[in-house]
Structures are given as C-alpha cells and as structure tokens.
Length: 163
Image (cartoon, rainbow, N blue to C red; front, side, top):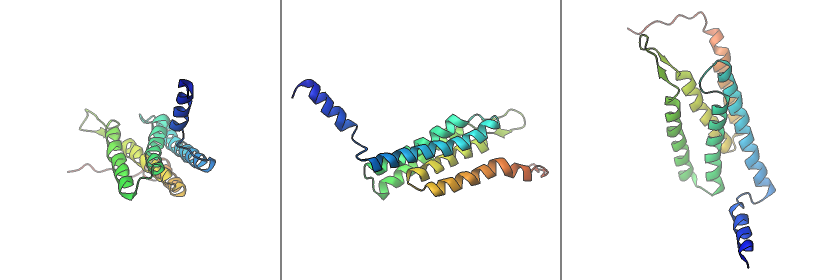
C-alpha cells in the first residue's frame, strides 16, 4: 500500500460516521428541522429589532440538536445524554447573559425575553436532536404565540412598580 492509498483509506474512515442512507437522512432531517425552527424563532426576534436574531437562533437550535445527535450517534447512554443536555442548558445561559443589558435609567433591565428565547430555542434544538420533532414544532408554535400574539392582549395592562 502506498502513501496515497493510506491517505484515502484514512479519509474514508474519518468520514464514515453516516453509515447508511437512513442514518444520513435522519441526521440531515434533524439538522434542517432545527435550522428551520430556530430560523422561525429568530425571524420573530429580528423583526422586533432584537440583538439575537435569525442567525443566532438558527445556530443555537442547530448546535443544541447537533450536541444531542452526535452523542446519540456514538452510542451515549441515558446518563451521558443527561450530562450533555445539562451542559447545553448551563452553557446557553452564558449566551443569554450577553443579551441582557442593564440600562442606566432607574435600574431598567432589557433583554430578558430575548435571553429566555435563546434558552428556549436551545430546548427546541435538544428536542429535535432527540428525534422529538413534533414536540419541537409544538413548542415553537407556543413560543411564537407568546412572543408575537400575547403582547397584543397585554397592551392595556399597567405594570405596578415594586415597593
């Protein structure tokens, strides 16, 4: 075996994680669904001029799905998968903190809804990565309702300051 044959065999073995058409289709579908759902959530945020928009939400959703999906592909058990999900939940919190900006006027805090949205988008991604696409779609629809429709019901509600 010459050097080029060794290189080709090594390359083939390195890219052999998608062993059949069914598995490749499953991985592609989950990543595309994660991108689509994250994109829908990000689009809603982007149209409202929020810092975390379509690209951020797509990446968060796909990233969470990929972490879970990758762990599943290597045969991670329930205990390992639990740790992966815990890591995503904790890690995404740091990203969410970056969207929260404390204003200078009267201690006003902005970005909490965006941070919660990024956190929820990661949860949607985890569901997609686990193969729970219907649950992820339902959660996305509920989230869009909360972000886009619910504010119309709260327009006349007055907030009382804490005493």
